[in-house]
Every structure is written in C-alpha cells, then in structure tokens.
Image (cartoon, rainbow, N blue to C red; front, side, top):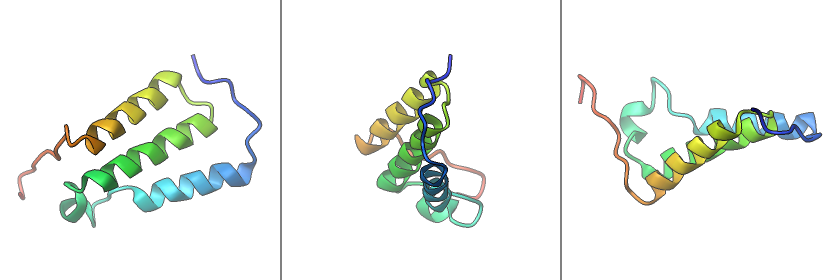
Length: 84
C-alpha cells in the first residue's frame, strides 16, 4: 500500500527529483564515488524523499532510509566489479 499522498507542490517534487539526479551515481562517476559512504547515504535519502513526495510504497521509503543509515554507520561497502 502506498503512502497517502499529501498535496505537495509540484515544484517541491521537481526539486527533490533534481537533487536525487545530482546525487545519483552513474556510469561516469561510479568508480570514483562508489565507496564514498556519505555520498551513497545522501543518494539513498534523496531517493526516499522522492518516493515519499510521490506517494510511493511505505516499504520502499523505509528500505531506502534503512540502507542510507547502514552507509552512514559504515556497515556497507560498495561491491566490486570486473574493472576493480
């Protein structure tokens, strides 16, 4: 069941989505920033915020938030890949 959608201004939703896009790792910066725990936590929190503002599933918001906390506590590390 999704989160009851509040009447969030569309500009707030756009700003959250823009923030998430700016924080997200991609093909160009993944190798440089994959191990930056604070960056990973921020990316996940921004994703949780987007989900919350868009009426996403409560379980998805909680999972993103929990994973962010694990990065902050340094409980997670980036997985390797064939190029590492």
